[in-house]
Amino acid sequence: MAMRVLIVDDTKTDRLLLKLHLSKLGYGTIEANNGQEAIDLFVENSQDLDLILMDVQMPCLNGFDAVRAIRKIQEQEKQEWLPVIFLSASAEDDDIEGAILAGGDDYLMKPISQKVLSAKMLAMQRIADMRRRLVETNLALEHLASTDHLTDVANRRAFEFVLDREMSFTRRYGVHMALAMFDLDKFKVVNDTYGHEAGDAVLVEVSKRIKIALRDSDIIGRLGGEEFGIILHNVKEDDVFKVFDRYRKIIAEQPVSYEDIEIPITTSVGVVMYTGEKVEDKAALLKRADASLYEAKETGRNKVVYHP
Image (tube, rainbow, N blue to C red; front, side, top):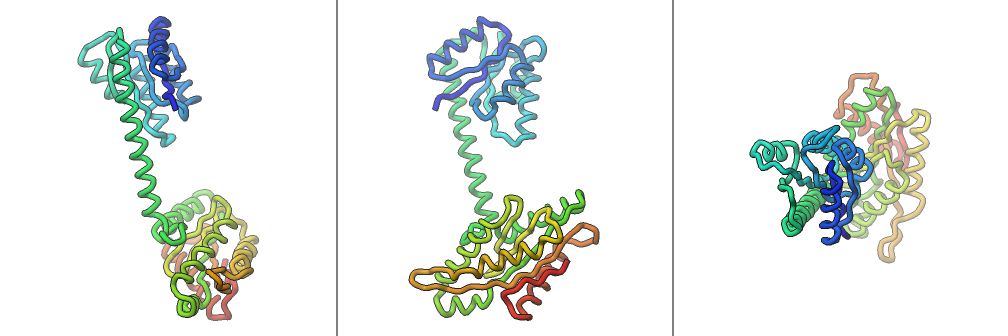
């Protein structure tokens, strides 16, 4: 797919010349005649732009200030870095230094030859590709660090991070959240009877069933072994028991198929509410949820014990 370039220059002739050069190189373009117009076009087209060619001296808003504003927007919106090449008739060291400090990646002297522009565009495209791959790699590493490798739900570290965040949100905005811990009943029997591969299949299937049932704002995490946690974001107290009893039924409603085996599975669930009214930290809330889970297991299993 061809790169799309934002050309920013207050001189129409310069814009037309750049557009002609870029067209011959196979690049698409949009144009702005000053820094403020460039910012507006960037906001409208940021997802479709690959590079900006920015004149330095322009009325309304100069190139340096325009790029500073664009970089600030990118930082606030957590957008990918967009390469910027400044264009100027000045070869003063202060101007070149100012371009880099403003957030530019390169500096070209006017008039610009097509060969130099072509080389610079190719270099910027390589830089953009490398940055994109770096972002993708970082996202992949972040996913690996925060995800349980078997079930593809949050691991304990990531789950507790979200729990901290949700508790802070609850305290700040006065909403309610619910924390549940659930444990697959007699899971050791499954492993001992059918083998650990069958046990893994059960864990994966249970995770899938709950993930499908959850809202986008809620989260499930594997806390260890056959124990999972669920956080319900901004939930009404009257709905909590019904929600988790439905999840319990979703797990138990049909056995897990593994090869030619049908493995029945049930779960015990311990649930607590957090409203932010009491002084309580993450460890205390997890302890309360664990106590509710223990009560569910000790009083018959395959049930929900809920303590507001």
